[in-house]
Image 1 (spheres, rainbow, N blue to C red):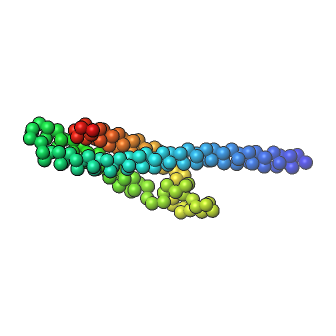
Image 2 (spheres, rainbow, N blue to C red):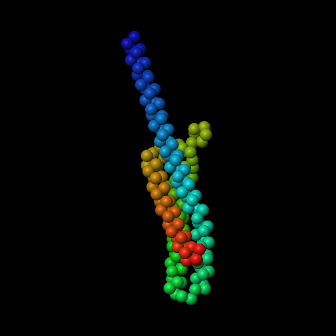
Image 3 (tube, helix red, strand yellow):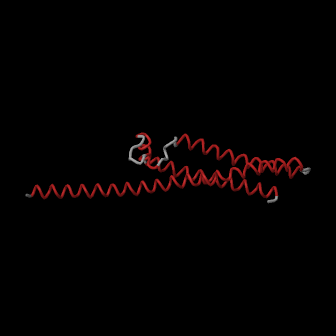
Amino acid sequence: MRTLTYTLAFLASLALLGSSCESKKSAEDEDLSRLKTEVIQEHDIAMVKMGKLMKLKKELNAKNETVADSTISEEIDWTIRELDEAHESMMNWMRNFSQNFPAGTLMESGMDHEGHGNEEESEMMEDEGFYNSLQEELVKIQKVDQQIDQAISKGKLMIGE
């Protein structure tokens, strides 16, 4: 009888431990999902600005052709370089991101709706380094977005917007 009691107690503790691990895993999955969403949203916000960035560059190039003052022309050239650098920063971030997180890596937990997925992607997402790398990417894309904002602001100022 005592063996049965110990066995039942042991099985109950395993069940509790299992549910505890599942809830911890669930919270980690939610954190990862939020982080993935935040990175993608930040990217999308920055991408929307790329059109404005290129439009400003075109307008500044046109303005520069009509400016007689060499000092103003140099300021316009500098602003165009800043717009180009912001554009290149975005392109570099996307290239690096694609290399670090190959296509499909950011699918919801690397799984399809049936809970099956690419094993390599699933293992990658379970790695703590994946979460940390994704956090680093968020910081990087936020910096790129700030660079784009600054270049756009300067470009608008130069064309008188």
